[in-house]
Length: 237
Image (cartoon, rainbow, N blue to C red; front, side):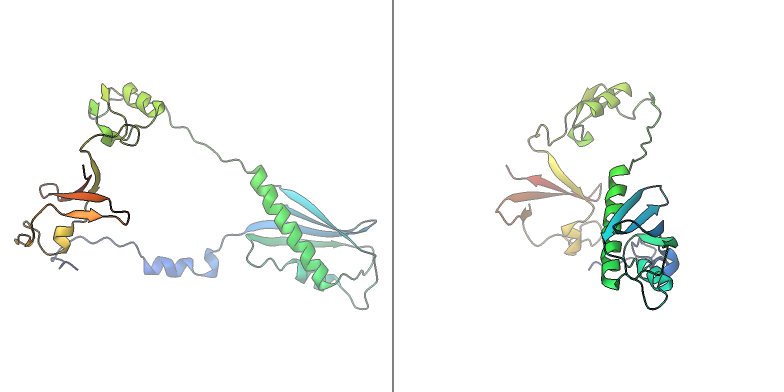
């Protein structure tokens, strides 16, 4: 690992305090749903309605039988077990004319079916809000774009023309350019080895150019641009 000089600006992508905050229960975001379990002529109907007005109903066909003990609290508890789903119950209503009994296993299966159908309904009814930026015509900083402009389609070319670019070359993927650099890397292998003539004041003990070799045998030539502090990768001719 290269030695870091004093006063070097460091950037980190792991914020321990932020990660700790996001791991708390208060960081969870759930979708509220109203749950209603009602009886029908053939058994029972479970209806789930979310905060975006998506609503689904699933039916359990079962002959009604009276329970020996009060069931409302147990029914609410079972229906409220939403586990790792993106939902939380904002209210649970039991609309029975009597103290009907439903086995916990059947109630759990009814709840799972309802959740699956509600998720499907949300996917179908979801409408992404698209924001279109206002059209602009100010001048682009340069009048010519090489393959590095990555102009792949007519819409991109039209955008640049409308902003004053006179000559536009297509993207490399569309029209390969012989001898073009495939990558511009801030990571430099010569620097990593401790052979940077600018920072380490040491020259490489090996004859250049260097090559990267992929698993399929393709070779990529490396070029070092010390003025820009870049390592460029070229496809071998």
